[in-house]
Amino acid sequence: MSGGNGHGLTLAEKVLARAAGVDRVVPGEIVEGNVDLAMMHEQGAQTVAPFHQMGAEKVWDPDRVVIAIDHWVPASTEGAAVLHRILRKFAAETNLPHFYDVGQHGICHQILAENGWVVPGDLAVGTDSHTNMLGAMGALATGIGPTEMAAVLALGRLWLKVPPTIQVRVHGSMGRGVTAKDLVLRVLGEIRTDGATYKSIEFTGPAIAALSMPERFTICNMTTEMGAKCGMVAPDQTTFDYLAPIAKHAMHPLRPDADARYERVLEIDLDGMPPMVACPFSPDNVRPLPDVAREHIKVDQVFLGSCTNARIEDLREGAALMKGHRVAKGVRFIVTPASTAIYDQCLKEGIIETFTEAGAVFTNSSCSACFGGNMGILAPDEVCASSSNRNFPGRMGAKEARIYLMSPVATVAAAIRGEVVDHRELL
Amino acid sequence: MQDVIEGRVWTLGSNVDTDGIISGKYLTIIDPEELKKHVFEIALPEFAKGARPGDILVAGENFGSGSSREHAPQAMRAIGVGAVVADSFARIFFRNAINLGLPTVEARGVRAIFEAGDTARIEMRAGRIANLRTGASVAFPPLPPHLLGLLDAGGLVEKVRRELAARKAATAPP
Image 1 (tube, each protein chain N blue to C red):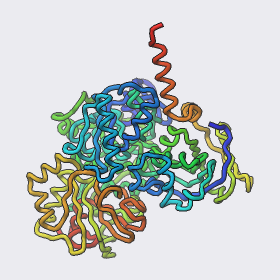
Image 2 (tube, rainbow over the protein chains, first blue to last red):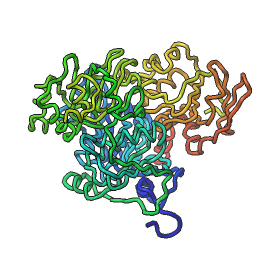
Image 3 (cartoon, chains in turn green, purple):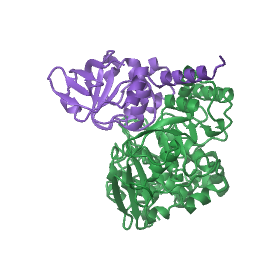
Image 4 (cartoon, rainbow over the protein chains, first blue to last red):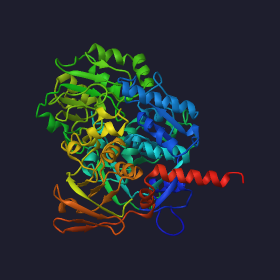
């Protein structure tokens, strides 16, 4: 409880108060917070010039900086090769030891998660909008641009406006074939793409407590699509068990006060909820999958990958469905694990073989087809079923291409049938 | 930053996302002069060729949603955009624009009072934006001092440069 005068604090307020070294903060207030972890991917190449222009000579704390290249790995264009070289040179010059280069690479957020770089109570920033994913650790994690990152590297802090918090309280249980992706799509359908702009989303309730860490990563990841500054889950035994063997620095577990003030409380009941799909051309254009399946939408490409949904659990579940089936004729099925560690695990478990024998292409870890700049690019009027997070015009290539966002297991069903389908028919 | 900004208006709808401003295939470009050729290729294809320095963008809700790519405001600055005005902004775009010294104004109801080709007059400190063709205007809460200071310095690079220089001077031996 809050004690003293006034009401209690939400989780985001607690973390920001800690970062700013004060007892309490209120929404709307601008605070300067000390950064616990700063992450850069290729966009960090644009951090180097402003860092030097600022007259900065050293990085505030090299042990709190992670570089993880992921958009074009290995470099697929000369431009990408230049970005990588700029980062390598900068890391060498400023003595940044934590560089996940080609061979140890993975999607930056997954690298932070599986190596314990973000822990409860942290203020973490990254040069990618989906940095929100790390809020699953009970941290405040958010995306910033490369110029701002230059200031963080120089000073070790940044200004933040304290966000109001929307509480998303989830109860009930997910039925067969329903996943955390369906849950977050459902929430996105309610909050919409601008409903949480500048705000924090705090997931609470018995159904959230029952989620694994990978599932929490998925739901926090897509708070970015709601416009949110951050998406968070208060740390509990699940968090501590996940982090205990890997945490890179001390945890400061914080929980929201029972009398915290929320701008809005959204109640979500999972009982009876069907799988969901986000239809073109916005991630909040969310409909029940069984309804969309009735339209028999043919797909040209299927993508199982991205920071939202390409962890070992996603790929295991997908492979279990894939086994005994083949990718439909005329469909390109791209499977991309979220990290090299996950790739290795897939190799050991025979998951790669399951996918490639079925006619899928199993690629090295990267952002892959998600962002339309590297591989798996869509031609005009093509249709893609994807486990990723965005379906704006031009997101995966041609602006006319249509992307349907769904759970990993639903993408596998789409690859088998060659159309958007309710995967529960195949389970 | 000028306190009064005037310019010719280009209009955009709501939910213009960063893929619509600079799509993923251009993200390896770091030269702003090259980047500006592709600005708004999806969301407003005639802009890159037709834009003049000082032009003002007026958009609806949630402008700049999506990715953290600074390429978006960078390309706008390179092509000479005088200010970006919207009913509301996505947060990372807003921060990136201010950090680059690109004046950014959130003014509820502003999209409704402009058509493409109108002339806008923005008073940054008074918090007022007017359509000089129709006389219509809307008020907005001026940016907080912290952010006005950033724009006055010309962006975050200059602000941090001054701070580091001051720190160095304070610790230098006499």
